[in-house]
Image 1: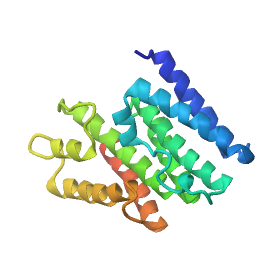
Image 2: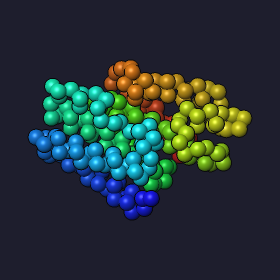
Image 3: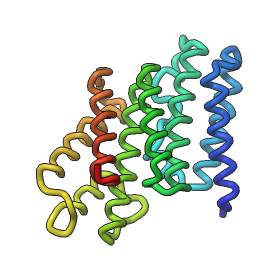
Length: 213
């Protein structure tokens, strides 16, 4: 069983790897970056469970990485999208889900991903933030949930009378999940303006329900 030190080492490795990728280093050795990214994923599967990791990050091979015509830049972009979502997932698993710096960093990463046209990555980062916010709200209300439960199940548990959400809040969240899910699974397209609206909505939701602003 992996120790907390093993998990923290992986977290730091992914963070440093992203720093290198964001600096544009080694675009000519995309295959080596891909190998390192795959090792990070294998370790994450071992440490956190393959099913949970797979449900919360972008995996390789869902878009152009399998395309023989994909350029090195295309491959690097997909690696960056995957590693951004992996880092956010590890941060949430190891840190306090309501820590302002974690929430802020994840949504900042979503904005960066959007600017780099990594649409699925940006949407998934929003979903991760929302899901962890719902977990913390369940904790505050002493509502029991399984660690593998996702946002759709969590929001149901937070409906009144046992929870805190009025029907209009619940419907708003459900609408956002309905928008996000097909995009995350690459079954639907979404334009950049809609993604930016989603990021702004998520920021407001966190501020209202966790910070009381």
